[in-house]
Length: 302
Image (tube, rainbow, N blue to C red):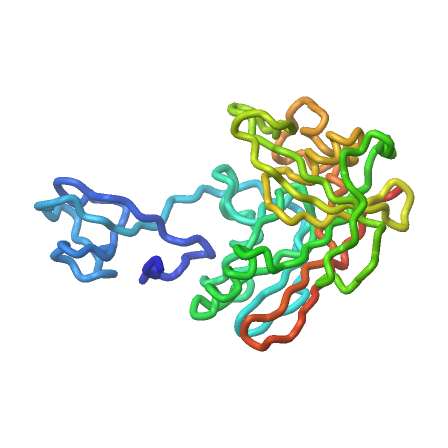
């Protein structure tokens, strides 16, 4: 298990680790990290100008400049000693993506709830809205992380598409839904097992069966609204649902990547992707009870 950083998050942003050589620089302020041969106790400030006899790991707080505000906010669906369940809006990153650090769900939750230990247990794309499960307690985090690692979490999405797929050409198979979904004998779902591979130097994912393609599995069925579908991913590949629906000839409304579109500005909020993580359910590893959390957001269907 990775050792916990001894420094708290500052303004919701975690410290970063680096390795120092020769001597401690004048800035930024640095704190000693754990190392078996370091002469500095973990978490102690390192004096500027200190000569270093060997490479020395250290912590520092990154200098994060102001960012343009993302004018959409989350809603808390549930909050206890172990979990925070948030309803994420479109356009707000779940965690930092390298370009956005302050304006993320994780940073906002940490600041608003005064808890620098909040960590999302899974991610939604920046453009996708809906339920995000976060750990609020490092002491119980591993138990919930195992649920996601072992695929013991059922996630249901709803997507509004541009047009109806050409059903006769679907490669998916009609199959009874898994019993743990509570719908024994339900044959309305189709199971899709297709290969996907992230294209080098591209935002898009390639769907196919060539070298380097990972097999993905998604269950899909029509929803009650026209041109909407429910999807349940079993695997968690990048852009899995967006790439699959585009592959089936039914791209999601508002998608800026599938099919290929001119790239949009990070701060172009005019056309939300019509994809929502509508429910997340699992058996709580601490209590053994079944828990389900449902998004209150709705897609724009008109």
